[in-house]
Amino acid sequence: MADNRKIAEQYIQAMAANDWEAQDRLLSDDFVEEYPQSGERIVGKKNRRAIIENYPGGEPSEASNTGPSPKPPVIVGSGDHFTATGQIKYPNGETWHVISLVEFRDGKIAKMTDYFAAPFEAPAWREPYVEKATAAARSR
Image (cartoon, rainbow, N blue to C red; front, top):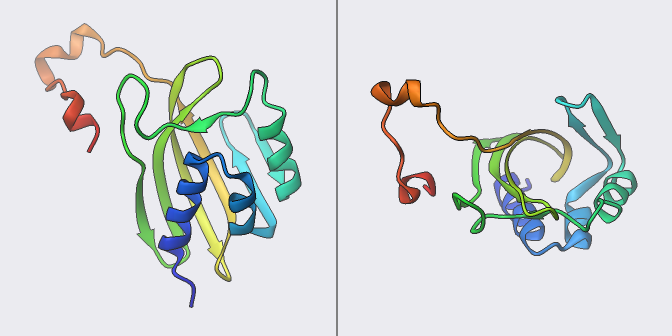
């Protein structure tokens, strides 16, 4: 039986290294990626790779230790379902948070559903009710 957690870790390492060949090896031949926020569905490794290679301004990259609030990727789950959280740095310099729901089949990543979120300043009105996380706490 494949160790899906290890495969998820290898995928994130390949993202950090911008190693598209390694990423492709970890994806099933009928891989599907969905972006619910934009309503897009990417069918096949070829289309996924074309989006990355044709991204305006250059390829986005995993940004585990860069950006305004560095945070290493976190993977949780078991069996065929994992959730990975991390950050992506875009060619325009922005770093966004990403949550990926990852589904495995036969030792390969068969489907990912990705949610993207831009960082934002905490509103002043919440100040009396919250603790402000330090940079160290945000990176855990």
